[in-house]
Image (cartoon, rainbow, N blue to C red; front, side, top):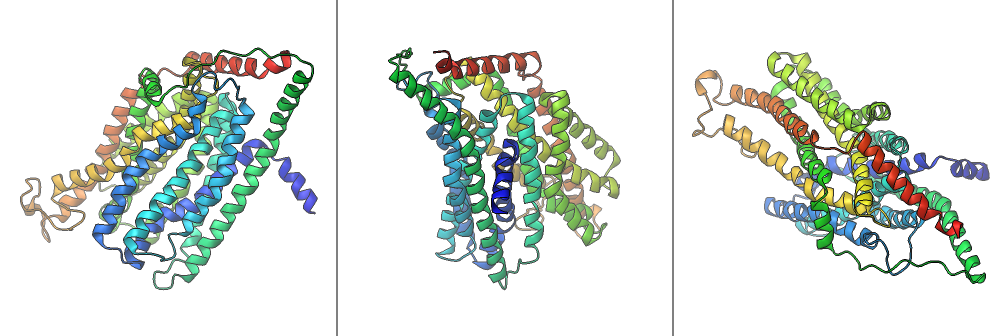
Length: 509
């Protein structure tokens, strides 16, 4: 029985094992996002100053650690020759799998540190956030980099991303299970639940990375055996001239000349802003636009579907990507976002059923677009590899540089949203009190309060004008992105030919 199970695991496709890593991240990360603030505020009673200090330090560290870890991981791949030793693709993949096998379990352990009080709430909050985000960043960077390293063709990468979305959707179920054990007054059951999730994640990371390493260690062993044979036969392999290591400043200059990278991060900055705007203001829109018009169960359904539907919807989007290409699908989603927002604006806030559909679909389509953009980054990795004639693709580093430029959108989303709401309605989301000196507040329109009717109108305009503005900006920048169609095929064929020629060098000798 055990041998049969082990045989089945060995026969699993690489795409399935790679995608399963998303499951072992999402079962923890969804619970973290939902409960960490409530735990420290309601259970550990953290004070407001310590909370904002922790969030500020976390914001800075969260922005800097992506390029930092990406640089530490991939700096040896930037020059075309490093110390006269060629690094093959299987060795690069093994390097990333080793990082995942070490940092995956540490990520699960750092998740557990949130749910037990072991220090002053302010200190624990700061340390837990930074440790958790550090291990999550290393895991995400190496996992995303494998998407570019395991495959070059769009079809194979779409297949890898398909299984990531499928397993992420399964991982979202941990949110629904957590409702059964969440209790601020009695934390024991929830802690046990988190320990079980962490153990599943540790076991999953260990098993999945071990299975993948078995496959690629065989290829590396064959290469080493061939090199040993050549040495025994006194066949001297031709050596390429040594080149100096590329510095961070030189790499940044290369990126500044990478036109498609610059247009992509402009578009993605807006996308990250919109994703986090929807997440931040989703409860506010439900409360002030729909709470008195729909039942509590309907509101819970809309909230729940917003977590799992993006992953399921992405499975359909990926099938469209195989047929039409990622560029066309993303552009179509931008046009769809613009069209739905204009329709909602014309219909007005009193169309309750249309409003429910729009609020849910706006979040689902926006999150779905975010998940497709990893495929675009892998194409940029290919173009960077070809343009700069690298010996190996610096996948993790490029993902880190994208994150560095786009993560400020996470901060801009609540700041701009609350500022617009306060400016238009006089409603301060922190004080819940109207500001008397705001011109747009119209007390004569209200029969039972100066700001309630205006607040509903402000929420509605915020709901529709933010997507309209984002869609227009994204369509403008996306129209300048040229890495699609014939250009993309040329880049992919060049990378494949370069990779294949280098992998065949030893065999040809």
